[in-house]
Amino acid sequence: MKRNIDWEDLRLFLAVARAGGLAGAAQATGVSAATLGRRVTALERDLNVRLVEREARGYRLTAAAHDLLRHLEDMEEVASAIATWKDGGRTRRRIRISAGDWTTRLLIGHIDKFWQPDADWTPEFLADLKSRDIARRQIDIGVRNARPKQAWLAGRKVGHVDYAVYQSRAVPRDTPLSWAGLVEDDANSPTGLWLKENHGGDAVITVNKGSLALSLVRSGHVKMLFPCFVGDGFSDLMRISDPIEKLKTERWLVMHQDERHGPELRQAISALARFLKQNPVLTSDR
Image (cartoon, rainbow, N blue to C red; front, side, top):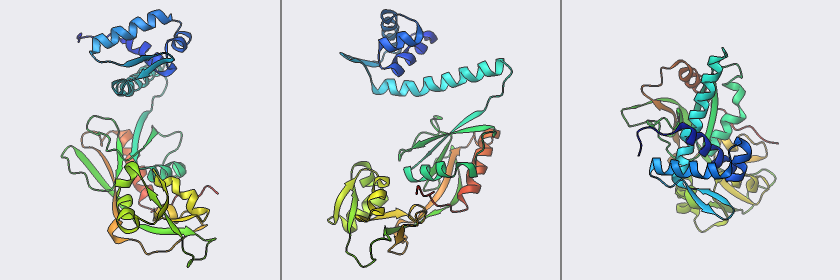
């Protein structure tokens, strides 16, 4: 690999990736499709990695290309910030916040409780169960269910999460209801494992995300295990069990040890901590 990568090749590859092929990128950049094709090939050669699979209908990005895109989007933001700084404008730090699907919905539903448009930072929410690498700066803050163990990470406990079984209030409590079940990645989550162990044969409908079961429960088709901050947020749901002690988890904000004292990140951590310590519930969409 060459010591210095051609930054223009990176910029043009970003345009190709976003357009899904050469024709759209040519229209967006004003660079001919033939030239774009050569620049993508040159970038692959410089990086010694395949970035695209060339197909009849365009380019399909490889896994390596998706990894590269995350870095290029960061570069693009930095370039934009530098341009704003050059013009005398104000720049704001983007704070990447990773959490599970339910917690991300909770944060977005109450965003005005911890963030305002005039803040010195802007949030980017990443909803997944992956432990994104804080050490490599893939995220800034992770909302996790345990204290971090790595020496380079810092944590701040902001509460706990209870789980209970819920059903629709429109269905009498003693009505026999089947369960919703979880498949794929969510089947291996604590919720999924509990359901499999205790009600594995009782699921009539399965989903690959717990959030997809919410409408099924609210419409009275099934019952389901939810975090209490989810189920308690909907007036048309009722708890039909006590909180399940085995599933109770802590809630932590996790960040890089060396980064946490930066002013914008410190503001974001403090704002999120104040909000989550209030034990908020999900905002109902009714």
